[in-house]
Amino acid sequence: MDFDSRISRRVRLHQDGSPAWKLAVFFAHSGDSWFWMAGLVVVWLFARGFWHNHTALLAIGVGVLAVLVLAIKFTIRRQRPEGEWGAIYRNTDPHSFPSGHAARAAMLAVMAWGLGPAWFGWVVLIWAPLVSLARVSTGVHYLSDILAGWVLGVLAGFAMLAIAPLLVGWFPFLF
Image (cartoon, rainbow, N blue to C red; front, side):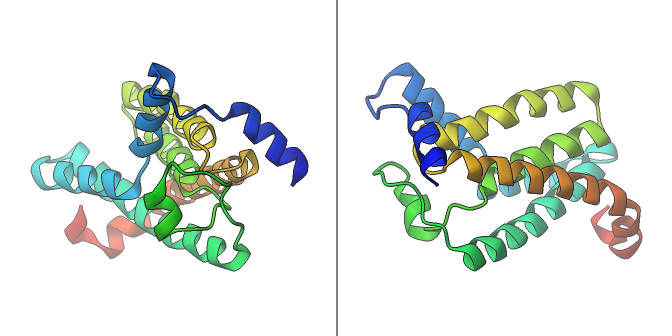
């Protein structure tokens, strides 16, 4: 814990309104599950074919992963790092391990690569570590929370890709 805390403090930015801080806040929020679910539902409602089907899979993954992350968080109950920024996270989810944002970002990156197109995979692959770094630099997670989130997210991403044909068969009305 001490090593993790020291490393995480070195990555943490000062809440000073600088461009670096504003960028970190943007990326920290860009991984919010409600943001992703809302965006995926909008695309699912208006797209047809490829994007309609893929956003359904991504949304199922986001939902299932959120439940899994919360179950782990409320089992382990590791408190978030001390800080003032991120009151919405601190009040609604006081536990930090594992990072749901990092897990979600990693899962979406794996699924984006697996589902395609390549440009989408690249965009999400570049975005994912920025979200994860932002969570530590804004002080709402420790580095180990992020690493555990990545492992969980990568595993969830591959699992979602593996069961995608089953999901299409079980829930054809979504696809």
